[in-house]
Amino acid sequence: MMHITLVIFFLLNLGAIQAEIVELRPGFYSETCPEAEDIVRGVIKRNMEREPRSAASVMRLQFHDCFVNGCDASLLLDDTPEMLGEKLCLSNINSLRSYEVVDEAKEAVEMACPGVVSCADIIIMAARDAVVLSGGPNWEVKLGRIDSLTASQEDADNIMPSPRADATTLIDLFSKFNLSVKDLVALSGSHSIGQGRCFSIVFRLYNQSGTGRPDPTIEPKFREKLDKLCPLGGDGNVTGDLDATPQVFDNQYFKDLVNGRGFLNSDETLFTNPETRGYVVQYRRNESAFFEAFVEGMIKMGDLQSGRPGEIRRNCRVVNSWEPAKLFASY
Ligand code: HEM
Image (cartoon, rainbow, N blue to C red):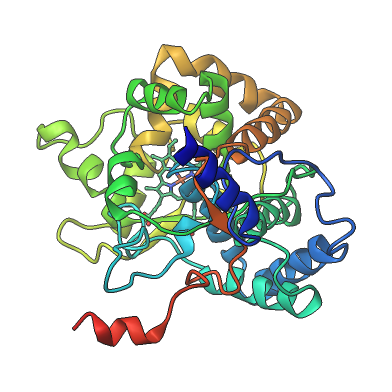
């Protein structure tokens, strides 16, 4: 007991290091860094002007950060000699991108208010901004997260879903994060923007479930197009659009699913499975219902926390205590 009390006392008194579940709220930085949200939005906008796809890439970071031990920017930590981080896990390697956009936002925020705004909060703001600036809904984000002191490639590999996943597997995974079937379908609507690699779909084009045949649910004309884009034995890094309007956040994704034109297996399965189909059909007809459910899902996903100790990182790629000397000491 004495020991626990001491630990808590220590944690509470160590300034930068905090533990426990923190209470997130809108306007968390209204006193300490009122310009934070404007700065982040400006950086996202400038990057989208340079490269429109960066909106999708930045938005995806929220999902990959929050599912692995909470929204704590663990995703952004570079590997060190002592730690294999999440950047090279199976779902992220050669796939997650636009880390430099978050770096740029962090640098700009640090210039205005050093040591105040967490990288974890910047991801959450940036994801929201990417959606708004692509024509999607706007919402107020809850803030006040702290950044992790570590990251785990193993955890990321164990948690993040495969593009081959079927609806039942996805329902099960999302339920572990207190996310409903409705949340799953609405959040998958994030694939209204962005691109995926041939690597993620070749199995469904040529060998769905080991049959040696394509996925029969792909609409034939669309399959022809995908076959051309991703020939068997071709370059897995070639990319295709996740829906027919990949720069606009809208409900086109759901229209495509109903027409057998989903890009990933994990997308199309949401229409073919009766448990999720109702929401796909609803969101195809009613874009506002999709937007509303999407916002609800993003807020719920943004609430995920590990309760582990953390800090406000100065640089999103490294923990504050990281010393280059350690690098040499370990060899
Ligand atoms: C439901 C389970 C999900 C699966 C299995 C999944 C899987 C994938 C895969 C395989 C890609 C393409 C990666 C590549 O080929 O390099 C992708 C792209 C993307 N994902 Fe998901 N995803 C899921 C849910 C989500 C969620 C919840 C979000 C955000 C809220 C999200 C946002 C995105 C975005 C925006 C892209 C495009 C990124 C870009 O263009 O750089 N995904 N996803």
